[in-house]
Length: 223
View (tube, rainbow, N blue to C red):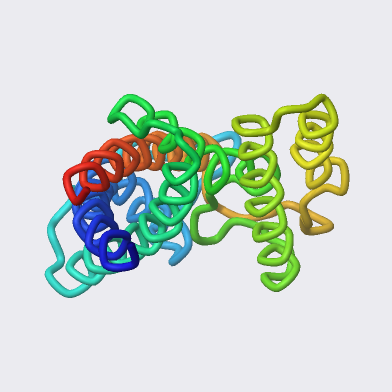
């Protein structure tokens, strides 16, 4: 069982991580590089004068982008280990894990790890205002854990009590509220921040759908 989980996770996670990295380089990295020009002072944004909507032409950096690709592959392999361990638990209890079901698992993973935390702490560009990193990490982990447990209860709970607890878990982190700075400031155009956050979430959703699909596929192929 353990070898089946690890093997499936390695194949599914590494492949999904590579796809995520390529999508990030295409749709997220240009906005990140553009924002760094505002952070360094190379570009300046003002409400009245505005600023250029176009960043620098993207050029592949072997060291920086290579490490990003490797990190993405490793982190999605970690996600795959957790997902397939949960899939194995469900499989033992008679739940059929088709590729279509795997996509649903992937969407659930995206909601737990990316979408729900982004309601309070959306992806941020360099130079953006932010609260204490420790407080943000605590809130992020608590939100991911609460959301993942809530989705599990929604999917596999068999009573109104389980679903009621799920609703409470989904709402609790946002009722408490994510930590934010006392004042917002910075020289990065808010429109650029919106593009970055939207693209980052879109890439995350695509990567998790691929991860769920491949996880179900490799789990069944290893049977």
